[in-house]
Length: 257
Image 1 (cartoon, rainbow, N blue to C red):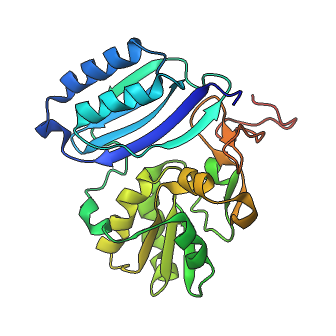
Image 2 (image 1 turned 60 degrees about the horizontal axis):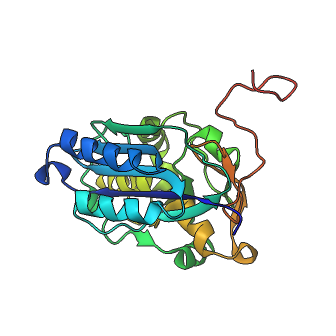
């Protein structure tokens, strides 16, 4: 394998403050990253953690073992590889939420709504299914699942307002939702259930797990997937894509302004 950098993305909703103060966890994580080639973003909150990091393939497994000890958990990362480091710095943040919805949500309401990549294909071929892309418009424009609804949001926290205005569109339907790595759906599936939309399903592990598990010949994904690192997008084989960065203003000539 020519690619030598491993990219790992994972999250979990759990009570981190019951383990130790968040500042102490931050200190331990920064030290573990500094001692190795690990770079990327770690978000900590009372509700859990959200991590996307990269490093030399020999360093990442060791780092993940350390995080499992810090978080007292078992990690199940989405993994890809690249021949250059996609992150340039260590960025460990403490936030109010590990993904910002700005709505109080009981994530336990989402239990039983997860579907695997194989189940997802079966679900999307059923009748009375509305496929909801919970990502932002600039992410949707690089690629999405066939027939997915684009809420045309610029931030995740705008999604509840879209649902409020269009709730009749989803009532009585099976709602199949997805996002990049799964974390946005972990909050939004319970949110929809709290609004009375009970027939809700979320793609377990998001697009990244789907592309990891499903052969391109059987994939219902169309286009590339926007990622939040220097690769900008990945293709159906989780290799660096060629799509433009729609998160930045585009000039008439197609160049970033």
